[in-house]
Image 1 (spheres, rainbow, N blue to C red):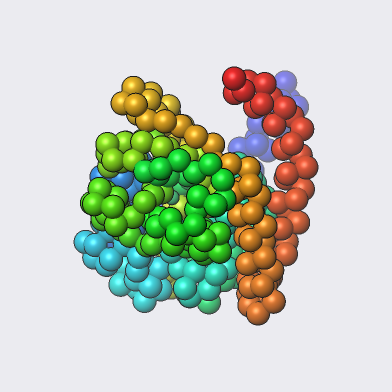
Image 2 (cartoon, rainbow, N blue to C red):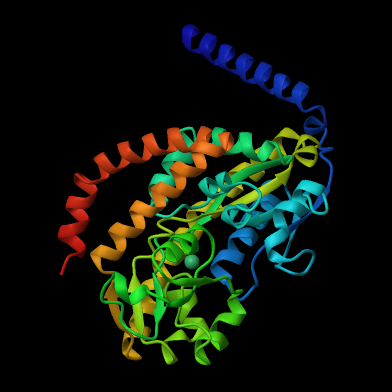
Length: 364
Ligand code: CA
């Protein structure tokens, strides 16, 4: 009994001293004086892309709930404050405190930004999370973002995308010759080397271009988002997989000066809420895509896998592009080399239990 009382007393003492230490660290917290902070978040996306846009709202709502309503982040759709493709610049300059975007939009500044999102024949969503959270990816990409006065956090993933909509079937590599396709970024560069003519078009411009024959094919996201744009009416051949986006990660960006001004508990709330958004966005796609795919099939869409020669040639070109870039861009090289080693190790592991299980379970 005496011993128990002693332990109880020791426990209480420890708890009290821990609390005191916490209170000392966050003097304001002890007196309930944490500041009310209002931030603006610039999203790259329209509200119609509810799954991607919604990830920023998930994050903002959770931050507000954790901080008893004191840290408020208002989400603005692409174009409301800055154009969708200028979110990184807006966060860097402090026009907004934070943003939500896809880092491969900024490969024009440095191709290494793509590692924070997706590179063709890169990591799957699970492998991307492994690399970012446990495999050194967050540290490596943060060195790059720091040069832009921005702190990056993983903030969503679509999973493997679809390869897009084609007016005619692609039976072999030769069928890509002269094909005008809406496909941005490094995927577009690879398509060009395969003989196609890549185009960069914003989401709203794709349907009319495809309808009037200005382009022959277009990639977007996957069944849930593609179905809303109505591509099935004008291009019946729906290809998979989107080898240029095997697990594209969205990111939250925070201006480093603004971050440094946050109380520690608000930072913790922000980081935790980003992780929640990262998980729930992928969960939303994995739930909504099968339902949308069913509708598309009922509408007469024809599904095709890309021919193996197209995939093999594209992968070879992808790594030629990365090797060439690493030869002239030290920032790219510094991320690429450990990323490539991580990818190799992941592939060796995933080809066993994961692929064995998936091939049996998903195979027809
Ligand atoms: Ca895409």
